[in-house]
Length: 607
Image (cartoon, rainbow, N blue to C red; front, side):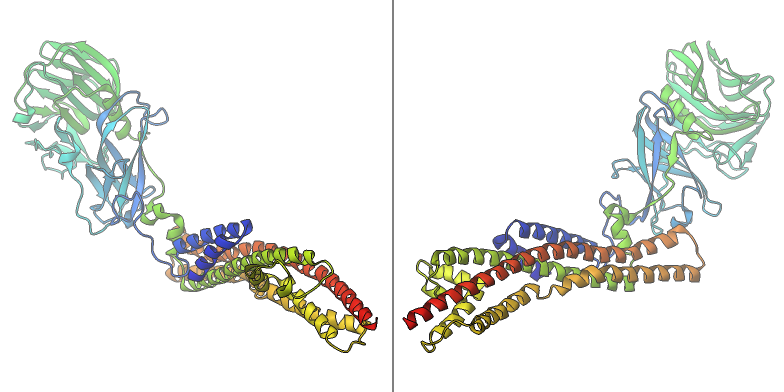
């Protein structure tokens, strides 16, 4: 490569516009070849923008609050969204068996996001994960990254960091049957008693089953204290199995949230609020209650369904969940803040079946993809393809070096010829050796002697003339003597043409042979890929595509060798033909002039 760079540098110093153009493309080609590492392919380095090189894969998770997704208009704030994974959008075999290597990173690809894995079943290809997304706004498509593929990574799930400090308690009902429900927040307000039953087919993983009798009890604690007028939010997924009569979802002293004939209501001391829409028996609905210090609000599936004036009284003591309720509850949350309506809507959109708020990309990105698909493909090259690609690149390097050298030679010849013709025309009929021409400096004479092929033809012709004029005085011009002088000059012309055509065969080999060599590599590479797949018995796109793509690099290398060589050959051939025509015309003119000079000398001798 060093001699090519030297040729480029020399061509820029001495060549013309065409030389600079060829040098530019040569340099670009060298950069491409060196970056691709086709001669000695290497694995891609760490991707630009990749969060951590120890993780091999990532998928884009889009939180879409625009009209095409959740259709949320205003700010949401810090929100906990549900990411559902299944075998159709997540390759469980590429992650750790227990999901310990899963990580979520914000859209800046730098900030890790807290998350909690509620369920991870690699065997059946199902997972439900809660992810805390900061500063979520309406009308946007927020992309966060799900990283995986580091089976040595420690567990990253952190429930306490996932749910913000305004949560008093969060119950997923993901505990074993007969075990009290655990609290996912840092408050550790676990239930004193378990729900009567557990259903594996809840709206989000497991759900608590209630039989209309014993409730789930939560003991009083400092983090559950509710002062008078304080804000409060309750939310839960509710599936009533019967609608008649009254059923309590949550009760604590004078505060009750429940259903009356399937219609949500709430009573807080002297304040009360009732909804307008009855829940559907046997269907899941998202029910929320919000007290903001001035009014009480009820929401069904994220939409406000009732509002009443009033504030919360001071309440303490144990909390009862599901007293007199027959059906299932899931994702019960208590907050000592008034959650905004947009967040309530985001909960319903993200957690319900068929929601459009959260989507996972169908395909995963491998770590090398940010460094270019080409780098990943190069890393999959078979040895035979690497050898053939290397051969094509060597042939290309030779062709480019030849093109640069020929252009330098042609440019120098043009310069030398122009200088020679300037003095040749000044001699008129007085043809003498160049060293005897008046007005030719030593520097000009050196340039002409070294670079002008036409001058070398002239010197041969003058030498032949001097031989004939130095002989007997009686020598006269004959057809034979003219033919002898022409033969000598033509011999020099053939020698000059041989210099011009020297090694041009390299370009023709690159043009005609490069594509066939590359095609051979592709055919052998594809054959090897299919052979490996047949032996492994694993027929899928992931197994086949990288090898075929790598095999196609051989054809690309062959074309990359032939195309520049073709352009260079046509360009050089046109210039060589032009110079050859110029020399042939000069030979005819020179022989005629030499014959005239010898004839005049013979006439003088006779006189």
